[in-house]
Length: 232
Image (tube, rainbow, N blue to C red; front, side, top):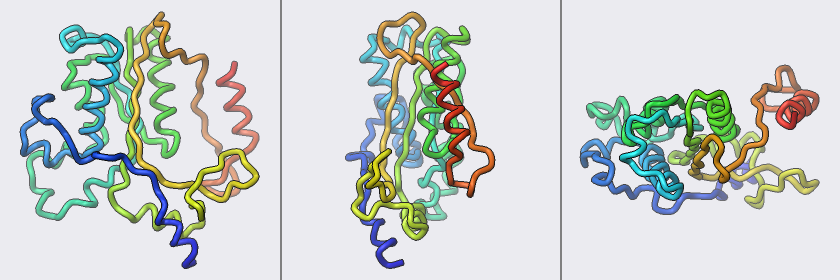
């Protein structure tokens, strides 16, 4: 048990996650202090990726662009002292639905907007939803985003106790040497546009394993069916 818990010393972390230029997004200092750093990162990255795709705020405002966000239960609320919960901004500061809504609000996007939590598949689920919305004509473009910050140790210690984490802190996916995974932070975003020559999504699918050996164990036949649907 001691060696398993020792795995918790490994991890990947976003540098400078606490920094935020609140003035650039019209957020007051008081509200910025109550906003989950995940939401702040999403605002910065959404703006950066749209800017990189030659999109401007004036052109986005009032348009039908979508925001699909992959996000797990935030640690921010657990890391705050009880007194912080009395802030008028606390209700939206750590709310997962508000995380996607804040991106649409600040950038003036009026297309589909949602936050999805499918654990480790949250980012891919957001990408799938974005691609489907663009293909179906629900919107001309979409911004699939994902974020994950590990702000409290509970999840990591629990995963280590369950023997899920790699003893050397290295993920070895599809490798015979695989011995667990390393919990890491991250944030990412793409821009999808109908008929665009940039990012291309050839196929995707969302499925569930159904019955398997346990809640967290994969179902081989269900996984094969998922790949066939995505590739078809």
